[in-house]
Image 1 (cartoon, rainbow, N blue to C red):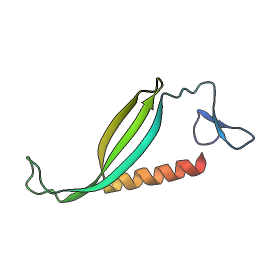
Image 2 (cartoon, rainbow, N blue to C red; image 1 turned 180 degrees about the vertical axis):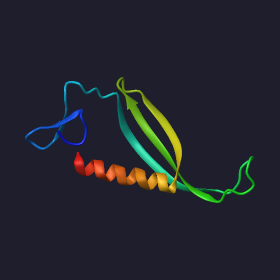
Image 3 (cartoon, rainbow, N blue to C red; image 1 turned 90 degrees about the horizontal axis):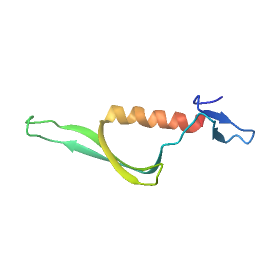
Image 4 (tube, one colour; image 1 turned 90 degrees about the vertical axis):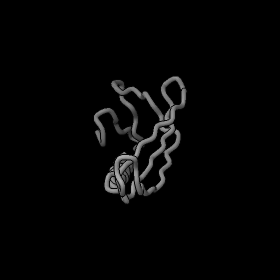
Length: 90
């Protein structure tokens, strides 16, 4: 077993879902952009860069929903490293 307890490797090397796994959502699109917040109603000066992430996710019925959130640069870097490691494992 490699990567996740819900995935098994077939002889072909392709990850396969086992009987206990259930796919609930599918990532359709991933976009990000770098931004700089300079001020807000509650703070006079922010001046910190951030990454805005926009996802399109389809649920099991095929309905597509948009999700968005913001991350600091270090959070985004950890996310990218984690994604790269998972891509190698899977």
